Length: 285
Ligand SMILES: NC(=O)c1ccc[n+]([C@@H]2O[C@H](COP(=O)([O-])OP(=O)(O)OC[C@H]3O[C@@H](n4cnc5c(N)ncnc54)[C@H](OP(=O)(O)O)[C@@H]3O)[C@@H](O)[C@H]2O)c1
Image (cartoon, rainbow, N blue to C red):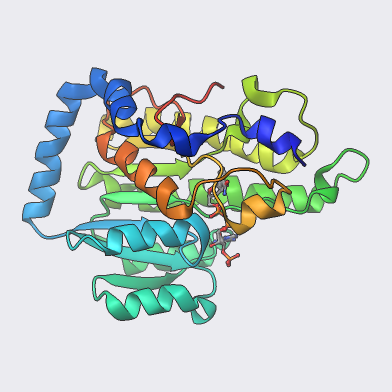
């Protein structure tokens, strides 16, 4: 699956990370006025106590690195969700060292889990919601001739319905503090970067659908002061990337999260809401 390298688009992202700060500044300079306003909002929120981030799929990979990053900053309260807390060894170890990190049960395909989570945190502000959890799915089942539509449904349930349902359920919590709702997208969603790559129908289609869903969500929530963002992590050394068969250069989870955190922090309500790669570039659609 070396073709994945071509599909995922942005090669050598680690080299580009050095220029990330400058790129992000350029990318978002048009939103400077909004950023000042947002800074005031954040200060207001911080003055009342710590800011809260809720992350899905926090037990491993990029989600765990997000949890580690925010847990390392005393200004953040971290709600680290995962679908099997009892088996989340690394996350439990992190929680044991950080009293401002709590673990919550969430399988994003489970409506009852989302309802319970929304009830548990009802009336509590959420400054940042990171929809990170996703599946790639087995390659043979999403290759022409072997397309498994049950697997397609499962991929859509995790990668599209889950983030949308969760964000709808927690929209009030985020709107209460003029916060941000992020979805982690992928270069594999891009029509432009398609090249000669074959297969991965379900994963690619799910991320394209996620992108469009996030545009619609942005239109609904911008008037309520919620910034709705799409961020792509680059090629990152995780189980998901290894499942894809990709064996080339990749960022560590920590490198990727450091870049995405900068992008998320700099984002404002007035940004156009296009998918931003970890190196600060807009991913072509
Ligand atoms: N790695 C890359 O190169 C890359 C590139 C582009 C985009 N992305 C995106 O980055 C995000 C994180 O991916 P990753 O590379 O960190 O993948 P990963 O290592 O495979 O981790 C995926 C996470 O999602 C969780 N998850 C799966 N199904 C779930 C469900 N039904 N409910 C809740 N959680 C569920 C997993 O939990 P379990 O342990 O319980 O399975 C795990 O915590 C994804 O949105 C992915 O599409 C990754």
